[in-house]
Image (cartoon, rainbow, N blue to C red; front, side, top):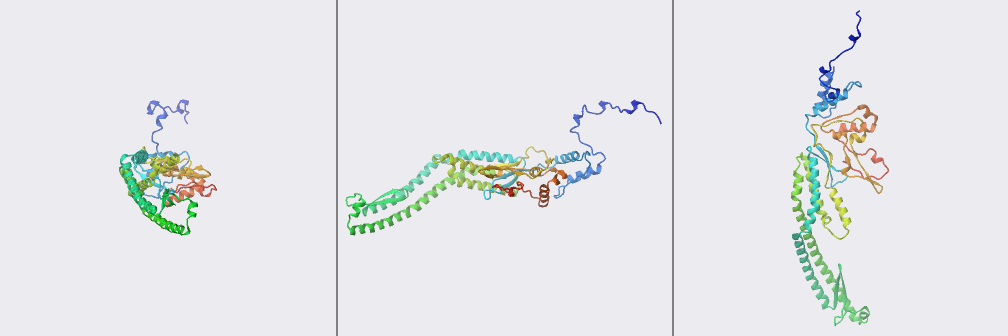
Length: 410
C-alpha cells in the first residue's frame, strides 16, 4: 500500500477548460438524462403521441430531476406543435345562462374583441345620427302627415254628423266628449237638458246612441290607419338601420377563419345581435323622457355585444406548457366570479376564468399526483373529465349555498 501525499487527494481543474465564466450561464443549458436512456425514449414517445386518452405517468426519486427533465422534454416538443386556438365566450341571446364557447385561430380572439368594441362605438354614433338625418326626418314627417290627413278626413265626417244632430264633439287623448246644442248652437247645461220635455229628451237619447255608434265606427276606421302608420315608421327605421349595419356585421361574421361549428355559432350570434338592435331602436333615440334610464338600458344592451377572451394565444410560440404546482379546484378547472347585488350573487359571461386545463389545451399540463389525491373533489372531477372529455366550469358547492345565486353553465 502506497502512502498518498495531500496534494494527490485534491482534484484540480483549469477554469478555462469548462467553457463558461460562471454557473449563471448554465441555467438555460439542456439537462442530460444521465443513465436514463430508456426513460428518455419512453418520455418522448409518450409526449409525441397524438392519440386521445393517453397520459404520461412519471415515477422517480425526489431530486432525480424528473420534473426538470420532463419540463424540458415538453418544451422541446411543444415548440414544434401548432399554436392552439384562442378560447372566447359570447352572449347566448336565447339562453343567457349558457354562454357560447367559441374557438378562434390564435390572435383572432383579440381581433374579434376589438372589432366588436369598435362596432359598439359605431352603433352609439351612427344610429342616433341616422335618426337625426334629413332623409329619415323627411320620410317620417311624410308618413305622419298622410296619417293626419286620413284621420282628419274621417273626423270631419264624424263632426258633420254630430253637428247635423245638434251635438258638439271634442277630442281628448283617445276619447271623444260630446255635448248637446240648442237650435242656436249654444251648449246646453245639465239643468237645461233636464228642463226639456220628456219627448225631446227621449229623442236626444236616441240620437246619442246613434252618435256613439258613429264614434265607434270612427275609431274602427282610425285604428287601422294608426297601425299602418306605426308599421310604416317601424319599417322605415328597421330598413335604414339594417342598411347601416350590413357591412359592419359582414366584417365581424366573415373576418375570422374558423371551423364550421364555430362559424355557425358566430353567424348565429351576429344574426341575434342584429335582431336585438332592431328590437331596441328606441334606446338609441335621444329623448327628454327619463334620459338616465334610457342610457342605463342602452348600456345593458351593448354589454351583450362584446366578446370575453378567456385564453389569448396571440403571443404563444408553439403549444403551451403548463405546470400546476398547487392544483386546486379553481386553478385546475377554472372559476366563475360573482358580485353581490342587493343580497343576490350575480355573474355574467365576462366573469368566466380559465384554469390550467383550459390554458394547456393543445399542449401539455404537468400535475403532481400526490397533490391531486389530497382533495377528493378535485380528483373526482378530474376523473370525470378524463372519461367524458368535457370540462364544466363551475364554482364548487355553489348549489349548496343558502345565499341566492344567479349562476352560469358555460
